[in-house]
Image 1 (tube, rainbow, N blue to C red):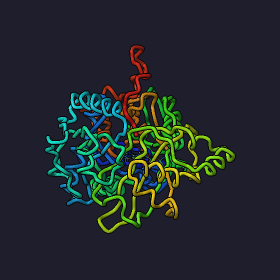
Image 2 (image 1 turned 180 degrees about the horizontal axis):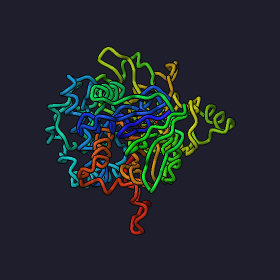
Image 3 (image 1 turned 30 degrees about the vertical axis):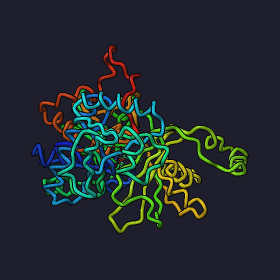
Image 4 (image 1 turned 90 degrees about the vertical axis):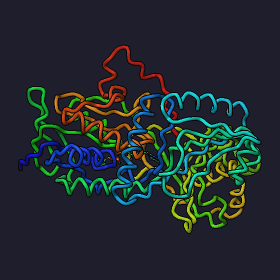
Length: 448
Ligand SMILES: Cc1cc2nc3c(=O)[nH]c(=O)nc-3n(C[C@H](O)[C@H](O)[C@H](O)COP(=O)(O)OP(=O)(O)OC[C@H]3O[C@@H](n4cnc5c(N)ncnc54)[C@H](O)[C@@H]3O)c2cc1C
C-alpha cells in the first residue's frame, strides 16, 4: 500500500509529539503523519520525574531551556493550566563548606549564561522570597544561595542539621508530563496531524533525498521530509537511513513511596543532596550486602540523591531518584529493576531529610519504574538535518527530554520548514561531529 504525507515524524514520545505540534500548529504544515507502534508517550516519556529547570552550566543549554520554558508557560496559559505547571525550584543542599563554594562559583557562571540573577542570603541579611506551592507566574528566576545551615533551615526546617548551605534554583519545577504531551498531541490532531499505529522499518532514499518511510504493516508513506524521534531507539532507526549517531543508553530508575508520616512537606521543592555519601548500614547489613555481591552499596556513593513530593496537598506520595551506578546497555523493555533500589534511595534521601529515617523500621512498599537516558558523548541533544536531504533527527535528550521538548520541537520544526533556526541551533546540530574542531569530550551539562 502507498500513502502520501508531507512530513512523517517517527516516534510519538514527548519529542516527536512536540515536533508534530510545532509543524502543524505553529508552522501551518497541514499534512503531518506521526508513526509509532506504541500508544503515545508510553516508552520513556511517562517514566520521568517530570521536572524542569533553566539552570545548566553552559550557554546553549540555558538558552534552549529558557526558550522551552517560555513555550511551556505560553501553553500553560493557553490550555487553562491543563498540565499543572509549577515552579517550586530545585534546592541543592550540602554539608561540605568546600562544595558550597563550588555551588557558589558554578552559580555565578550559570547566571552569566542568562539563567537569572544570583541572590546571596546569610544570617541577618535574609531577603529570600519563598516559592508558592502551585503556579509559576509570580516566582522569581535566577537562584538563591544560602550561606550557613541556620539560614537554610529557617526556610527548610526539615533539612539535616549537618547542612552548611544550599542553592535554590528558581526557574525550575515540575508539571504533569503526560497531560502536557497529550495537550500538544490534541492540538496537533486538531491541526491535521494523523497518528498511525505502526513501526518504521526502513526509509526510501533516491538521489540523496528521503522519498518515503516504510512501515512494518507494508505501507510506504511517501514524504518530503522525515523526522526520527525514537528515544532510546534513535540510533537504531536513524541507522536504517544510513545515519550513524554517537548515542548510548543509560538505565535510570525512579522510586515512589507513600510518606504516610508526612515527613516531606507537600510544598517542598525538588530536593537534591549535592554530596557523596556513605549509607549507615548496620555491621550485619553491611556483611550481608557484601556477601550478596552488593559492595557498590557499602562504600562512598555518588552525589545527587534527589526527590520531591508528588501530587497535591492531600497526596502522600514522594518520588525519588539516585543513579548510584552508571549502567550503559542496549535498551530492553520492560527495563530491568534493581530489587534494592527503593530502599537504597529512601536511605539516601534520609541523609538530607532525617525524618525519613523513621521509615527504616517498616519500609514503605516502593513502586519502581524507569527507562533510558539516550545520550551523546557530551550529553547535549541532537536536533536537525542528518544524512540524506529531508531527514532530520530529534532526540538524545537524556534526562531532560520533558523540559527540552517544546524548545527542541520548535528548533527541528523550523529547520524542516526552512525557517531561521535559533542561535543555539548549531550547538545541537546532529552534524557537529563532522567538524574536526568540535570537542565532544567536554562534558559540562550537569545532568542529574
Ligand atoms: C527515570 C527517569 C527520570 C527522568 N526525569 C526527567 C525529568 O525530571 N525531566 C525531564 O525533562 N526529563 C526526564 N527524563 C528524561 C525524559 O523522560 C526523556 O528524555 C524523554 O521522555 C525522551 O523522550 P523521547 O520522545 O525522545 O523518547 P520516548 O518517550 O522513548 O519516545 C520514543 C518513541 O519512539 C517510538 N519508536 C521507536 N522506534 C520506532 C520505530 N521503529 N517506528 C516508530 N516509532 C518508534 C517508541 O515506541 C516511542 O514511543 C527522565 C527519564 C527517566 C528514565
